[in-house]
Amino acid sequence: MDVRLHPGKIFAILLASVSLISVGLFVSRQWWMPAAAARHASSLDKLIVWAMIDAGIAFLLAQLALAALVWRSRVDTDARVVPFTSGVRVAVVLSVLFISLELYSAATLGRRAWGSMFSVPSTADRVRAQVMGQQFAFYFRYPGRDGQFGPIHVEKIDASIGNYFGLDTKKDEASKDDVVVAALVLPVNQPVELILSSQDVIHSFYVRELRIQQDMVPGMQIPVRFTPTKIGKYEITCTQLCGLGHYRMRAYLEVVSASDFEKWIQAREH
Ligand SMILES: [Cu+2]
Image 1 (cartoon, rainbow, N blue to C red):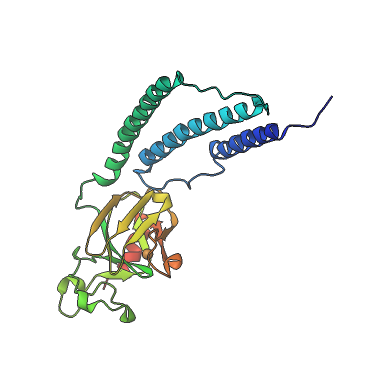
Image 2: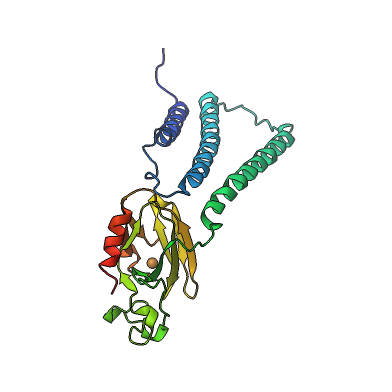
């Protein structure tokens, strides 16, 4: 008996194994996102899981069908190619149905996830901070005891003296107690509002655990509202290719207890 495998059969086995293993890595969560740490994250995760299941099934079916066809194929010199004309209409109708169903469910789930992030009202009880992006760092400003952000004077922005927000602390009463820092600290389980801007080019504010990724655009003040739910230290990275130093543009978000946050902010307000 000839036990040698035809190269086509080896290819079919390889294709099926690689497909099954790569889907298995996602199903077993070997390749997965870090645990979520914000209230809106569950609706976003649901959307991602749904998209992964949907794409995973389609991927697996297509790859296994291909592997099965390759397995069965023979090298026949006198084989004729048989066109599959009668199947075209069925294939088109099924594709249109499948894609419509996909778009409909993605839009329904997506609308909910989008709403949980961007249709959140700006309430007065939110902890507020401004985030300024510049090549290649993030800076954060809290309004201080008066709850007011002092005005930004663009001509006064000067990183060399640490005036990242262009504040005039001599003239502007509201600027005097503003707290400007290089790390973001937030209290757990309290609604937060961050206002994102940029000094130079487009940057992006990305925290994996918060499931938040928002561009920071020069000339715009973009609000991001969320509630952190887990104490911990999370990396903030710039995910918009913004120049030669893009790779080192990052900062840290520390989510702490309400009392630790009070202590931290009081030590800096003056
Ligand atoms: Cu950047």
